[in-house]
Amino acid sequence: MPERTEAARLRVGGLQRWTSIDFPGRLAAVVFCQGCPWRCSYCQNPELLDARVEPQLAWEEVIAFLRGRRGLLDGVVFSGGEPLLQAALPAAMAEVRALGFEVALHTSGMYPQRLREVLPLVDWIGLDVKAPWHRLDALTASRDSASRVLDSLLQVLVSRVAHECRTTWSPELFPLEELHTLTEELSTLGVKRWCLQQCRGGTLPHPAPWRGDLALFAQRFESFEFRAA
Picture 1: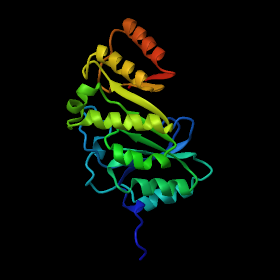
Picture 2 (picture 1 turned 90 degrees about the vertical axis):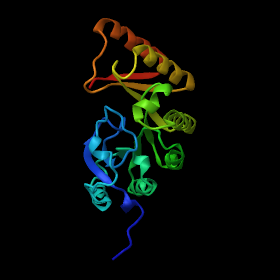
Picture 3 (picture 1 turned 45 degrees about the vertical axis):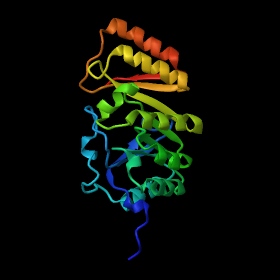
Picture 4 (picture 1 turned 120 degrees about the horizontal axis):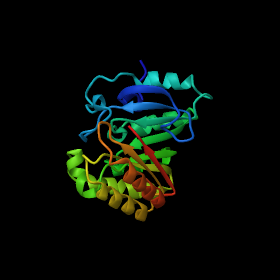
C-alpha cells in the first residue's frame, strides 16, 4: 500500500463543487478545512470548528474530483474553519497547482507565520479583519488576536498578492463609529479593496443615514462592496 502524501492528511469538512463568488473572476471549487481556534459568536460554519471530528471527505476524493474538472474550473478556494490551522495545507495547495488550478485562501489571519509560508502558492486572498483591534480578543475569545491579524495584513499588502479585506458587522458587535475608525485605519495602511458583510441575525441602522455611511466607506477604498446577509 503506497505511503500517504502530506496533502492526504488534510482534514476536509466539505466540498462545494462550483462557485462564482468566492474567488473573484474565477469559477472555482471550495474546499472547507476543519478546525478553528477562534470562537466568534456569529460563525457561519460552526460544524467546522472542531478539528478532531471525522473528515467528510478524504483528500484523495477531492483530488479525483478536481482531475475531472480540469478545463471546466479555474481555481480552488481553501476556506474553513481556518485553513492555516492544518500543517498539510501547503502540500494540498501545491497538489492543486500541479493540476493547473489557481489557488485562493480565505483566512482570518490568526497564523501569520504559516501565511508567510503559503503566500508563494496563493493567487488571491480573502482576509477577515473582524473588528477594531482593541475588540478582537473579546470577539474571537483568544488572546493576542490583534497583533496576529495586523501581522498577516501587512504581509498580504507587501506581497502584492491579489486580495480583499472584509469585515462582518452589525451594531450588536461594536458601534458604527468604531467601524468608521477601522475603515480609516485600513485605508491608511494601504488596503484598496474592502467588503462589509452584514452579520446574520444582526440589525442595521436606519436606512437613510446608513446610505450615507456606505457612501463614506466607498470613498475610502478603490473597491468597496456591501454584502447583505
